[in-house]
Length: 213
Length: 414
Image (tube, rainbow over all chains, first blue to last red; front, side, top):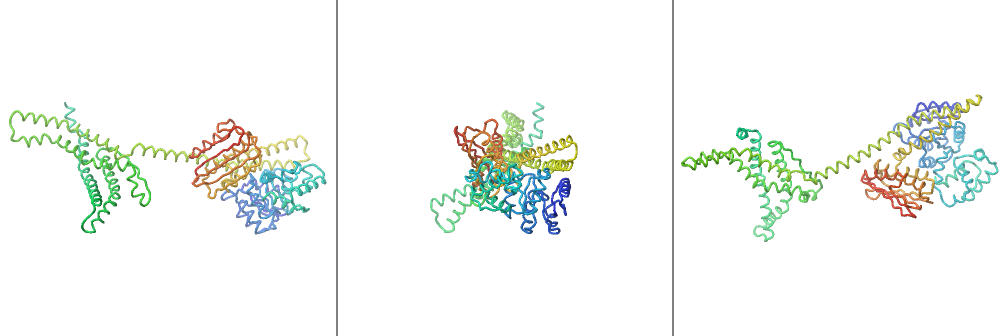
């Protein structure tokens, strides 16, 4: 899978390039700022873009803005945003353009090598990967009555669904059986009055829509 | 005796004399203008009151004088005061600071001087200058010129009285240096009071400069926090992520190593991850970057979302406040919500941030057990109250036992 990487720190750019290459990705371009990122995306048409939020020249939110441009201009290209801190507002911006092929993760997560590579593959395949911290922030925005009807276990499952995980992924994290997860999921959809769906990414869409993004 | 004689030629005596004599002429000139203007104005007003007669142009003239006179006098007064202050500076070596003139627009500006004490004080000086200043000048000149006058006047006088006249003239001459300096001092004292700034002016200026330097300090502290946040973000945080990433890759790659080696790598990897999380929390507490990027609403959304209890957030700030004000509001909410979570045993809270005119009002309300105060130990509210006070704002806590608790922050937001 072909990746364009944008990260202003030389050290991390090298580290991430190695990580991605070892993980079976082909890094076709690694650039230090948003302008070069947009040029590289136009030139290479990669499968997925990995982008840092704070980059030159203003060191504010160029990464998010570049991600939004890419999402609008190339809906087929998946974007995974990495940041030292996650903000619910940035997540809302990102998801406003669509929830498939989007990732928003804390930079720390790259240190959990296999988890990060899994998340990136999921995003590249048109799925969603939201950092647990982002999901927590989204969840607290909706602390209303239907949410209170969920059992703690169902809330865990909802959280993992919002992160973009499939049933198999949820099964692995919670260490419960596949059928148990299916039951939790159907309970959640009933209690929150969401339209039932099997496809993973449509499920994420429903959950995120419910969470108000 | 030599000291008395030497005084006659001392520079100070002559300086004082020139100063007083110059004051006499200058005072007479400026006084003539001011008195003349006053008399004209009074005549015009009286004529209007009595009922003007004669040619129709006259009433128009009276009205013009009655209205325009008061407009023209303050600039004259200020100009004359500047001349007088210049006389003190050049001839007497005394600096008298000019009072501040309020600036305004239109009619307000034109009539404003009459509402300030300093204009009236200057006015008084110029009214008195021809009388008292003139008198002083004449006395000084008489003292210096006494022997000459006696010589001229006593030409035909003979007899024992002559000695009396000459004696008196000599005494006056010898006294002249002291008389001149005394009158100059009296003039200086009067000018300082009437032409200079009064205590209120000086205090007002001092308050203004203190407020400015205090605001500068707050802004400087804020800038410093931003700089540290940025340095940590660009430096230590990136290095630490890189370190954790390398350890993570090592952990994934070297699975065929002896268990002790794997254990050490795993421990180092975990430590690096924990350090990253701690550093992230610290950096966010220092200064949240999202506050600068997206403003109060976005930053508060983040705080509210992190709170371990349901919080309703309402932000209505159409135009953004200055960075230091936003920072105060942000940290106040952050601290208040931390306290709610720690101490209040509340089930829900509400945060409202509103801009009302040129004030930003932020309230944090919870339905907890109350009993909190700014001085409660373990809360950072005291520091925040001080930060708010430093920008002429305030932070108050209303928290009766049994609740509810409301923390209100008022800060200026221009």
